[in-house]
Image (cartoon, rainbow, N blue to C red):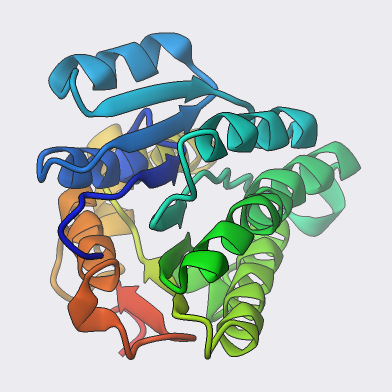
Length: 253
């Protein structure tokens, strides 16, 4: 990334993995464009590193809002790093999955990264340098019951990653996917709530059922995922492109 501390863009930056990624870069001195739906949560993030975080309120399901956000970013030059992190994870049997859930999931998990790449990649190519990191999931590499739409969206994001990596291979821009397992975030909390409702288990039992899917016996931490992203954005990762980095405590081993 050089020594000029170029701009970083992180979507879904207000909580969970996105917040950890934004803080990892900001605390190293990088200006971070932090995109999310919640203005209050973004202000909380900015309060931690006020001179580095630049909050932008934008709904990942709103294409026009995303393109407008990109214009704001590009007014200060093309970013060096784009972390497409924002995502949602509905869970339901096939016949109980609504088309509204299908459309929203695809819009946020797949269309939003596509739109952001369309808008921001040309500037990276012109500069002959850039890093795109797509936050996929282990559900983008294998199937899980009751997550047909989520898994499909993440499989598609992995496909987008690989295709763009080849398209941009000689441009100086790398494209990689990070595939976490169960990370201790609000998304996991919602999954545990669903288990409680369906099975009558306690919150602790539900959380143990999820973390127990990892052979290491615990959830992945958001900061651990952020560290992988930080590495992929570095000069040391310049020859890595089209890769899927799994961080799942051995779940897919």
